[in-house]
Image (tube, rainbow, N blue to C red):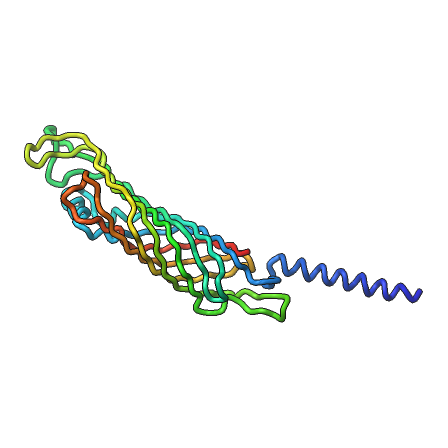
Length: 247
């Protein structure tokens, strides 16, 4: 008879410990340790600077404006915690635009527009140092960690950017005024640097939302299809929002 209270107490303690462990793993705001690895997926808008002379030539001769080079962008990042405030982030982005255009001042012999498609794509592959401006959470004793709700951050980084500028369709010889079909293309890699700022919003201990504004600097040499032009400007601003997971 004396063993029954002891058994009941042991059973109740076991249930309490199991319930606590399940609650901590199910997202009530507690973790056994601070997450060390993160994955982010995001999308948004990219706005290239488009300030070099090749873009000026395109926008002057064709029915293309600088705003037509704006496009959707998608990206992914993998981060590793270095210290409580610093992460090493490796990631990539893709943005690309396509614009059907025609010559502003010329038409063909039947007075139809002379049309072509201009496309512009950029793919940076970078590494960044990301700094959180406030603690990402706090430890409770030696056994639990509570993530913060809001986590503002800034960062800088660099890497390499692949680009492609392509025009495909009909063109006019400025000297003979003859019309011909052709494809002009330039692509390659260039060094790049960037700076960014944003905010992580925790939804559960492992998952949340992330938003970021980023400015990228890059210039590249053009291929012989665009000979006579200076280096192409690949710089620009992007704004993204997405999801993250931390483990």
